[in-house]
Amino acid sequence: MNKATTLILFAAFVLASCRGTLSDREPIHLNRNMDFQERFDPQESNPFFADNRSMRMPVAGTVARGMLREDVGFYEGRGTDGGYVEDLPVPTTMALLERGQERYEIFCTPCHGSAGDGQGIVATGGYGLTPVPTFHGERLREVEDGYVYDVIANGVRTMPAYGKQVPTADRWAIVAYVRALQRSQYATPDDVPAGIRAEIQQGAGSSGRE
Image (tube, rainbow, N blue to C red; front, side):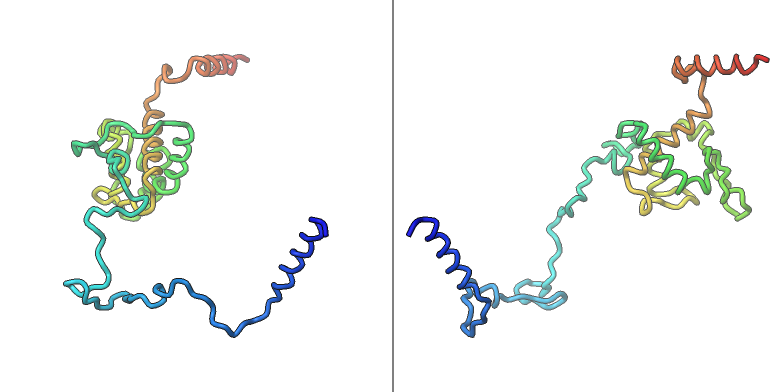
């Protein structure tokens, strides 16, 4: 009998032994202690502890997975001294501004208006709402970015908090877009890139010709 024949016969023997029949013999259980361990249901008394509570409080300082917020500037909009951060703690990119615009139009436009002038449909629709301040006033143009973030998260005066509806990263995106709106209302020719400025000037000149 050669090697190939031996392997074929062994494989046939193995397959034949797997017939799917049931056995009335008790299965071998190698770790019975897991079946008979003492356990307590929720709210059940546990005499092992002095307070007789089976449900234990987490150790002091325990932080849930994914909830460690060491970056106070990012999560709270404040520095280590407790003051508002001056600038965004994230890079200002086109993607951030586009996200901010999308979120702004959903959550902010009804009151603050598309241009940030406080002339949203809710503010001007005769609903008895307290007048909404414009973002283009000197005070709000001078406040820290962290202040704007804090207002979004926690509200201020008659404005409700949006911390539950708007995630942390989206709050900063909205702050970035608000700054873009403010910049747009006070832009100067020097704010326009030279190449684009030349195209605008050229277009304005040609449009005046007959």
